Length: 264
Image (cartoon, rainbow, N blue to C red):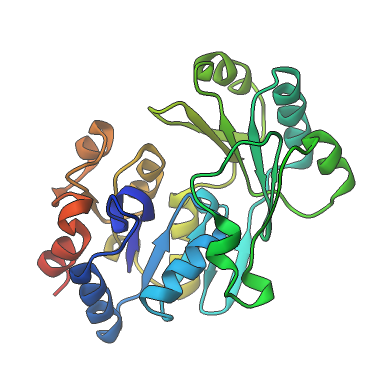
């Protein structure tokens, strides 16, 4: 099985997938190798991206909190008590946050996401579209809306460590902190590595036969579920330090080059 991160890995700086990567992914699929997009992005965003590359791709989204392999979808939402505690903290701190459900993103402020999720998924069937609501009272929404929440994205820039310090003692959650200041919150029972291991169990794949390619801190748990770990040339240093192989950068089609070299 081949597991591929999206941003900074499959995506180049223009948010495009290079031609060599597309060719090599299709070659792997044609040879019967399972290939999955494993992203921190909203599941439906990752799903459409995977469909555009090759409909045979499986998808893991929300940093591992939701996955779909061969028509079987499973998710690990943030526990409701922990969710309420985090949202109350963020409202008290007036910290912008995005609460992500399978098809809906609730935003506490009028702060833009990193991409237009609504436009990107508008051409998808209704079950794969994303709706975004801005300037929402997230604690109130969480109390009124019982649908699972798979991820919180916190725009804590300038206050990252102060917010993270308050989040770390809370039970039931896992956090990822990024160099640019954002914080991701998911269930303590979820990450990319856990999702990969569960998918491998479902498909009867030996973890030693899993190749993972990534670039960022949330890919470190993915590496724990892989027998062969590949860091992008543009990866952060902790990812490079855990890798068995370092490929070219995302702007040099590093995924395609790694697959060409390592998957025969």
